[in-house]
Image (cartoon, rainbow, N blue to C red; front, top):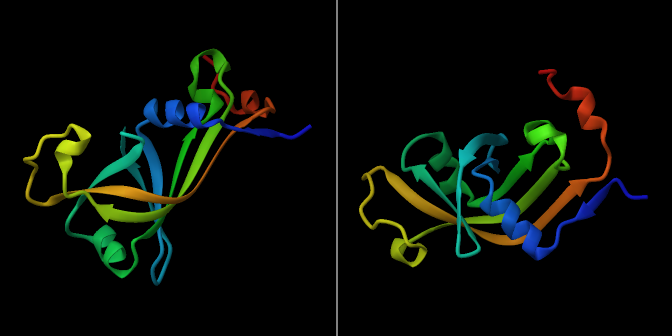
Length: 138
């Protein structure tokens, strides 16, 4: 029996809608990964990036990214939900029409909205139950 099950398109949509954080990994001279908040609107992952700093240096060199969203079992009520992960590969693209996503058009000057142009997406949930071993006792 396999240790994981692939999520359906509907399960992936629900998973992405119900989470707000992931790890954004970028390529450059050295690997760089950082936690990022995101929004999921119109089947698109959106994130705001400050227009200065290390992240933007990486984006300017290469807009290729990997974004990982994970919901460990030990963070779910009563450990009932399997550990679930989505890994998104693609590139960051500037969003020029914020209203298309139902967002305000005025934003701070140093903030740019990006979307992930997805080239590959995989999402799975675990069938095993070893996560209970790592859960904090309450």
